[in-house]
Length: 131
Length: 70
Image 1 (cartoon, chains in turn orange, brown):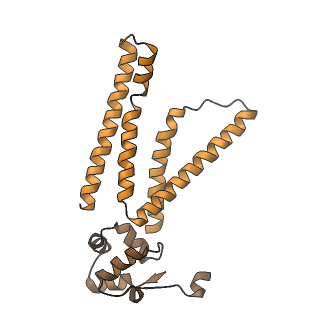
Image 2: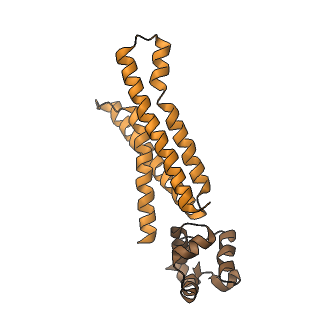
């Protein structure tokens, strides 16, 4: 299969997962507003949006496996940078939180920040090698 | 690792994109190999050499000691 076709297929699948994620966020919001649910139903509805994210992760893993060796190396390095940044920033936050009153951090934002940051770092690495 | 890919491409009048499509890798991969920023695997080196009908050692050669020290 041509690279451009693979890229188009990846984008279609990935965007489908993102659309499904948004739909399930809406379902979650309306369910909490309009329905009288038991606790276990609330847990299920709350976690529903995780499913398309797992699907998106599997789509991205398939894309990674289809990359050439150079793009695999850069993608790995970008993840290393992002995991390093995440570990150091959480460690710094934790150290400060032991001594000072720190503002709360929304943990649900960690994943989008990691994946968004990874994409940005990957583009920077590609740009650095191609400048 | 040094290489003669740019010269060989010019002789064939191929762009990096053309060579990348013939081999089935990204243009960025060809650019990185060509500029010595990525040492290709043996398979990729063979693929590149095959495109130019040459042997690997006619295209790729190690950097000299002075180049490595720079």
